[in-house]
Length: 418
Image 1 (cartoon, helix red, strand yellow):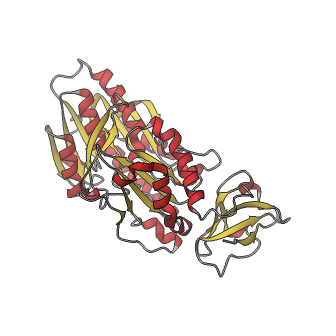
Image 2: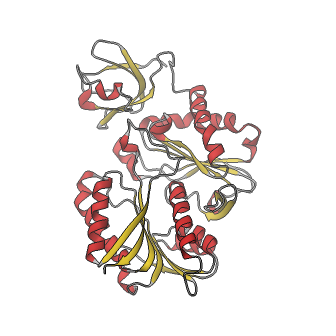
Image 3: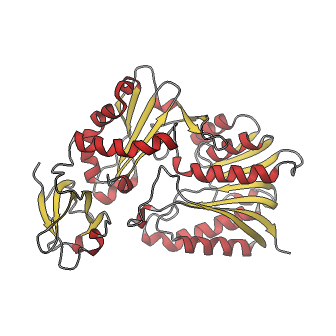
């Protein structure tokens, strides 16, 4: 495949030369027009020197995304290229996360716009892929043969699911599609999977979670919180040994399938969890995963926390979906985070633990910290923040690509102000 040639404006090569993987349309010498979204492009600087190969999209503000900076890699749209990237991505992840993990994290793994989560069960594995961009959509053509090379003889027990049902595809003028099974395994249903997740107490061991990988949120499970859950489990378990009379009371807001509280309850021992989510399906899965000693509340957690008494929980987990989707949503999203955290902090007993997260990439950490401080003042709480986390190591970050650093997590011990 012979690429088209695009040229950067004079002086507009500084960012991409520093290995940022994006080029905006206003950085090009001419407005990008007349190509199919996702077409292979060779990018050159103003002097005509090779910079990178990647794919273009004339309908997107991000006009070009880098696939390779190696002049000898002529055609990234191939099984060989795709397999080499997935094999490289898999090497360390298989050692760090012997169970389910994110295999490909878009730009951080050199495949912009492509997300692949690898879920393992006792007898099968399921790869769930999402193409967020037009170029990633074209790369899906090479997904199945690349995975077959990657897993070898295990391919017979491997399912592949495509989840192109995410709203961000609209920014690339891509249709939102129904989930589909690209490769099935006879007798195995990904919508009723029992996936294995590393234990927060003993990472070499696994915990089984009931999930729906066809209709569930994102790719069916949120793998990016693994490190933060392990941190909370360690802090709360050691601090609460012998300190609580009766079961530890946990409030899991936006619980989805209950991974925070399931890991916690298994580590702490005697506990009672209140699961809150707007999805009835998610709550049923969370209840199944958690087992006994829980109750479910189907409600919008942002608006429904008044039903709970002040200082009634030992641990409150606040892990909402992104409240800020675009720059225009910043003011209302920040207000939403403030309201939510104010109400959540009110519910924690003195000496208890609060977890507050944001997966809104557009919300800077300094602004999130200011929101947490303001929320604590509003409800008369003094909070000792003891841990600060981000996305799990299978969701790596590149220093030259700060846009990929989206997850913020703060864990604190709550006190009343003297």
